[in-house]
Image (spheres, rainbow, N blue to C red):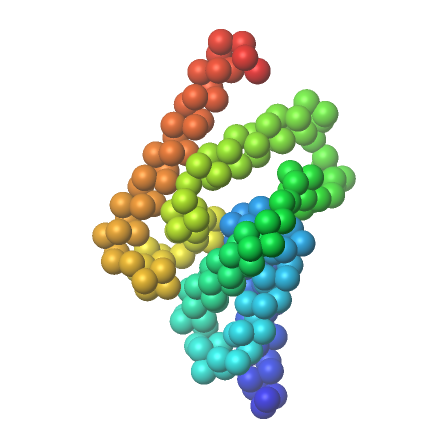
Length: 182
């Protein structure tokens, strides 16, 4: 590998690895598995330096590779019939900082995360991936359509429907909280 290619790959890894990891963690629901998937994504990227050299193409392409890796890992996990517990998600929570919230704030934050997780769990894997790529990672609909192999119209509709599920889940949570259920 040439020094210029090595620099381009290192730059891409440093800039995008945290985003790819977060995307995979959200898709897979397991921080350790997301670590492995992130590494596999970049191993595959290493073999395609012609794309890595073009940053405007590399980012959407990386998300596509990450999605494919997550699908492969989900299939392998299903074949092994291995169950991951919700405790794995707690390990992914960041350590408290010097600006840690109050205990009440911490509890409300965890409760909000559980509502978001419940809403995301209602979505199909493709719909969740499209929503996360759009909202959490800022990818354009056209890029999402290309990497998912869908039409632009389908991507727009699927993201709209995913947002509707989120809205309905939050509305149900609010209604329950108003009735004193929480």
